[in-house]
Length: 248
Image 1 (tube, helix red, strand yellow):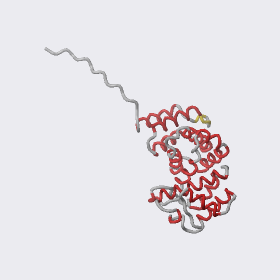
Image 2: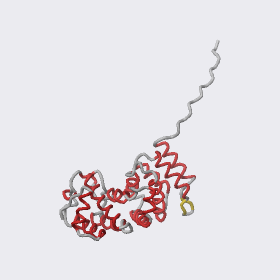
Image 3: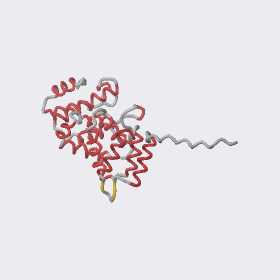
Image 4: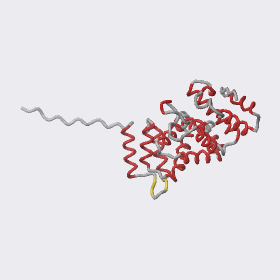
């Protein structure tokens, strides 16, 4: 005699997608619910997508790159999208280095143009007081991003290796990005850049290859002096207070 059939076991509820699955789901959704329609950004939709990426869907730089590509944001809307992203991250200060790293990785992957980042940083400079009221360390994004795109050989483990991207072109970009900051804040950014480079290299800035040659350090010191309307000795003192010793 056959035993009575057993009722089929109820399959366990599927856990919410995580990691690559969640990214796959989000990218799939962007086909049906894009962040751009008729050339205009849907700000609410963009905000939702960016928040999901930030809250865990994007775990690695390549996740951000894949998601950004799927968003198909036109070049003339990149700055607007980046501004929304950074404004969102300023409200999440627990990991201040993450956002500039993400933006730098998007630049390195040719998903975002340097000009778009410059446009955003210049715009932030006009309203930095309002941003600092929300996050007093928000200005660090300037230094952190600019160090991420500092020209370095590919084997260096940090920075950006790109044909034609030299110290000179990087420095010109730095000056453009900080042009709307209050002079004292722009000076703080330059000091922080040198300190971050030292941290990454593990040695004094004037011993770092790429900085020791030519007049690079003296140009930075001259810029800090210009911003502070002070003599170079005072600029050197300001750097020393940040742990950066320069003999010019």
